[in-house]
Image (cartoon, protein in one colour):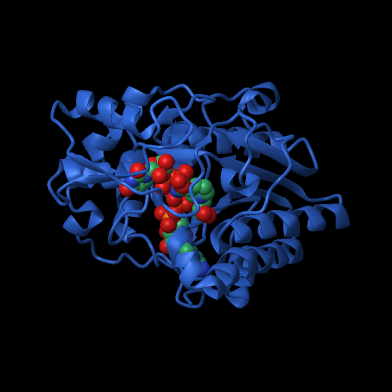
Amino acid sequence: MILVTGGAGYIGSHAVLELLQAGHEVLVLDNLCNSSRVAISRVERLAGRPVNFIKGDVRNRPLLNALFAAYPIEAVMHFAGLKAVGESVREPLRYYETNVSGSIALCQAMAEAGVFRLVFSSSATVYGETSVMPISEQCPTGVPTNPYGQSKLMAENVLRGLANSDPRWSIGLLRYFNPIGAHESGQIGEDPDGTPNNLLPFMLQVAVGRRSELNIFGDDYPTPDGTGVRDYIHVVDLVKGHLKALERLEQSNGVSVWNLGTGAGYSVMQMVRAFEEVTGRPLPYVIKPRRPGDIAQCWSDPRKAWQELGWRAERDLTTMLADAWRWQRQNPRGYAGEKTGDKKTAPAALAS
Ligand code: NAD
Ligand code: UDP
């Protein structure tokens, strides 16, 4: 059985579906602070199998101990965390506590239970500002400009120290570039709370009429059209990389780092044009000043994951945008449009 922390969230829910479809048993631990129980119900429907779901906090050591005692957990995918850059600047302690202390609590419980295989959600933000493109895993980590990025780098360092201290650990640090898109069914996808920070969720809300126009943050970057360039990767490709990493970690130990990206960069303006093609309608936008802390460009060298995991991203930009658009059209208000009875799958003694 695989424990998936944060399994009700955007990436976690896609990972849970992929794990179930690959025949794994899954236990989800999520406090639902940024997600909905509906996502889990939809994953169950798509997979045709129930999911063991526990509503609880990854920082809750007694709960973690009880879970490791009650379920035959062989490995962990650790998605639970906070991810809003701006919020992390305003509330740094909450970010360090959840992203760093949460990872520490999880590893303590894993070690006590004799579970040493861990896939960790890291981010390309740990590379900081670097001008050499594409970014390979050899590129030194930089100085992330905000507490979110710092918390990811700190968690990576905690995990390195841990693996150095005990050879039984086998840890994959997966550095994501820009995950977008949704499962092809349109049943699960990204459902941001409030105003979206990220480009595609904002564009989607403009397209369904929830917002009037997109703000393009800067058209004076040293890029071909002046707008920021990123490496967007389909969330389904991303989670397939996690399953490959999980398999690979069974035969290795120590820490392994893999970039999960496509290797191709697209500018904001290219994203707007490609999105207009997919939706068949114009996307209103205005040019605004650069967003503080943004880098001009960032794309991956994905070759290490291909060489070592036999994994590479397969879905192109049009597929990413079409799948995201299907999700948004079918669920204009995200998961809020649906209520489910809160099926209690947690044994009462384990619920926090
Ligand atoms: P998300 O917010 O949709 O998912 C995170 C999940 O963790 C949510 O369901 C939330 O309820 C849960 N959670 C948060 N704090 C928790 C706690 N203390 N205990 C239990 N559950 C808790 O975000 P996502 O986009 O799916 O991201 C998943 C992971 O990937 C995060 O660690 C994030 O930092 C990392 N990541 C995301 C991106 C991205 O662009 N989405 C990029 C790089 C890295
Ligand atoms: N961006 C934008 N308008 C938005 C959100 C983002 O122009 O409403 C730009 C941003 O400046 C960057 C790119 O889109 O160049 C991707 O931003 P996102 O926040 O999605 O990812 P990140 O900056 O974290 O890589």
